[in-house]
Image (cartoon, rainbow, N blue to C red; front, side, top):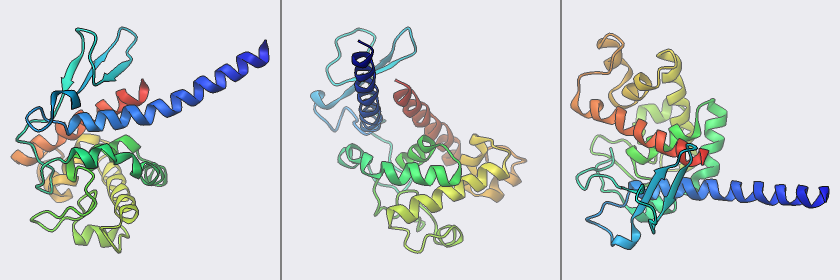
Length: 222
C-alpha cells in the first residue's frame, strides 16, 4: 500500500512539472492573442480560485473566467507586432532562460517578462535604435556583458540577465528602478533622483513588464 502511494505521489509530481511549463506557455500565448487578430476559439481565459490557484483554458466553463489579451495597439519594444506563433513556441528557450537566471541570480520569470515586452520572443528582432535579439541589447551593452553574437539566443539572454542583475545591484534590488534603467538607461534613473524617469515610454514600460511578470508567477504557482 505504501509503495502504491509513493508511485501515485511520483506520478502526480511529474504531472505538476509537466503542467507548469504548459501553463507558463499558455500565459505567454494569452498575452499575444489580441481579439482582433485571432479567432474566438484561439483565445485564452483565466481566473484565480479561492485557494489562489490560477486557471487557464481556451474553453471557459465558469463565469469567473476573463479573457487575456494585449491591446491591439501594443507592439514590442523592437517595434514589431506580437506574433502568437513565436509566443506559442517560447518554451524552446526555457533551458536558456533558466540557466541564465540561475547564473545571474535573478528570477527566470522576470527575464521572460522582459523578453515578452522587448521582442515577443523574436530572436532576430532589431529596433530602430539598433537594439538586437530576444532582450533587445544595444551593441555596447551586448559587448559589455559578453554577447559576441546578439542574435544567438543563449548569448543574448545570458548577457541580458547579467545586465539586469547589474541594474538590480546598482539600484538596491529595486525591480521597478532596474526595469526603468533597462529601458531608459542607468544615467536617466540617476538624473531622476532614483525615480522612474518621466518619459512616456518608460512610464508605460515598467508596469507592462511587471504585469506580465506577475501573470507568469501566478501561472507557475498553479
